[in-house]
Amino acid sequence: MKHVIIGTAGHVDHGKTALVRALTGIDTDRLEEEKRRGVTIELGFAYIDFEDGTRAGVIDVPGHERFIRNMLAGAGGIDLAMLVVAADEGVMPQTREHLGILTQLGISNGLVAVTKSDKAEPDWLELVIEEIGQLVRNTFLEGKPVLPVSAYTEEGLSELKQALHTMVTGADEKQTHLPFRLPVDRVFPVDGFGIVVTGTLIEGSVCCGDVAEILPSREKAPVRSIQVHGESVETAYAGQRTAISLAGVKRGGIKRGDVVALKGTLNVTDTIDVRLNVLPGCGRTLKSGSELHLFHGTRTMLVKAILYDCDELSAGESCFARLKLKEPLPCKRGDRFVVRFYSPLETIGGGVILDSTPKKRIPRGSAAQDALVVRESGSAAEIAELAANELGRVFTEVDLRMRADLDERACQKAIGALTESGRIKQLMPGKYISSGTLAQLGEKCVKLLGGYHRAFPLRAGMNIAELRQKMMPDADLTGANAVLDALRDDGVIAASDKTAALPGFYAELTPAQSEIREKLLEIFAGAGFEAPPVDEIASMFEKTGKTGFQQVLENLISGGELIMLSPQILWSKDTFEKAVGMLLGHFGKEDEITLAQCRDMLGTSRKYALAFLEYLDRIKATRKHGDSRKLVKSGAQPSR
Image 1 (cartoon, one colour):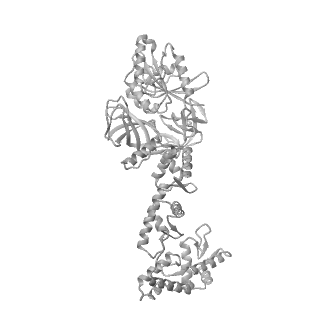
Image 2: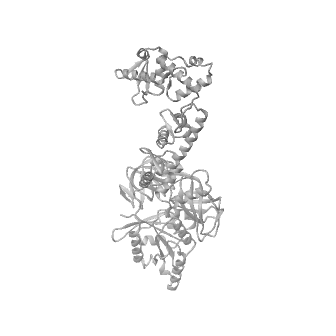
Image 3: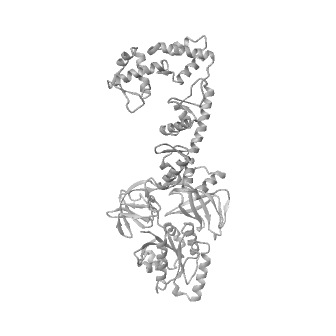
């Protein structure tokens, strides 16, 4: 079933509330002050039932200039507009302003009801209808029905109701698959139900038991119960006027202007990039740096408008702009808003949010403009690719969804298309990176390794941990390793478990260094588990130069031919692997090994056995347990 909201709009005292009462039988003036003054102050809510069983919600919004804020709070949830013009007065200032607001909010269908037709002579009525035609020219109401009606004599009422029914049945279906979102326009306590909020559900569907998030505070609250048009329901759908009872919320914990949404689905921001429009009939100029009132959903706040690539906007003009908000705003890409001048208070225009979480630094140049063009009119895949490049790191589907402001279904589809085309790369289940970002990291990696090879020409490569930290200092270990694996697979780097180098790099030794290398390998191979300390070995090469010895020693360590158990104790690779084999044989029979057992197993001294075990502890192959050590089953295992 479609859930459609019809909203009234028009000048004060043009008969909106009386017309709604005649159509629905419901008096939307619910406040005593409203009845006394005969002016709608707060939003009024009703519903209209058609003969075929179709029901549509009706919002009666205030027309008086002083109550424009309440009018805007209601206009955000409207699907069909019913612009009301009194036959005895014709088009008035708020008529024009309300039409401009409806246009800026993206409402695309509606009609004009010419009320109080019983008070106007036929000739005068004809002039009013002609004036309305001029008013709606080049707006969404151009060519739509203009229907004279009287709420008192009921003349034209059936024709108006039939026209509304036709529009309701032809209205687009709401996107109920989206996460639910309800801008709050009323908050009040109810005995036995706790805090109740009301508003128009503008997206998704909400069920009893769902966990809602109150924004911008991000307080979580389970949905206790739901009512639609005063009737208890299990589920409310987009397009319905909805009352929700929230469990565990204290008085003052939520207020008008807040948003109730499915947790983790909406950004909260203090800066937005937008398409900003000035109304065609506006008599003022909007200058860059102007302070404005922003109206978004049911929220109102002061903002500062920074125009991109121009200094001012005149009537009918538009541009990209940044709005710096004085308060946090829950919003998403595609949301509509209205802006009014700070002083004097009058509507100047509105627009659409293009980026709800832009970079803090104001962008300059064509690249920034091109990015906003993509966000304004690009496909979901194009927006997702842009967002992936902007993230500039390893990301999850949730990361991309929030940055691109895409719903879950659209984001998953975009990821599939981008992965298939190679524009993003899946590093592991649930982890992705854009091809552009991977290429940039590859360039950075090549530059780092090139510099390292120049500084240490005899080392086999840079330590993996050092490279990871310098290339991606803020990345988590799993993601950074996945990037290095991808660069290795693509042939950008040559990497082992411990070192990385440029493809084709090798340490080229001089004849003298080659002689030292062979001598060192001979010494460590012959020494077995009891190799001499490094300082003692270094003294053997004083005549040939300690520098040459140190460089060759680093070459052997970085290449994995020597294993450094401690700064003074090194084993050859074969010796280390022999010890690991003996250790694994022991753990095949026993759960633990003591230092004494390890010493006896290796047939060496306590010094060497301890250095071996402490090295295994450092690489998390073993774990000390009292006086013994156990093999870490889920951790890194000693290499053989």
